[in-house]
Image 1 (spheres, rainbow, N blue to C red):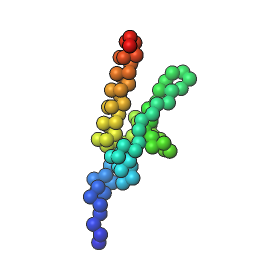
Image 2: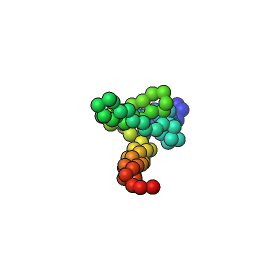
Image 3: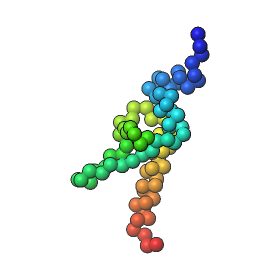
Image 4: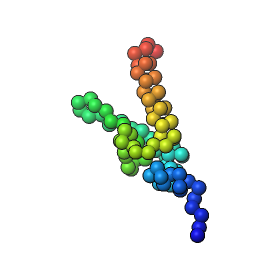
Length: 86
C-alpha cells in the first residue's frame, strides 16, 4: 500500500483538491467584483477560467481568508482616500 500525500487526509475532509490547494497557496487565484446595472456587487474568486462566489465557498483555507482580508482593506483604504485632495 502506498502512502498518501501529506495533505490528503487533512484537505480531503475539507473538500479541497490538491490543485485548489496549490492554486491558493501560490496565489494563482484572486478576487474580482461583478457589478450589476442596479449597483449591487458580487465578489468572486477566480483563476481566470473558473469562478465561485466568495460568500458560497464551502471550505475557504487560511490563504483564502488572507486574500479576502487584503481585498477588503484595499477597498476601504481606496474609499477613505477617494475624497482626499492629492
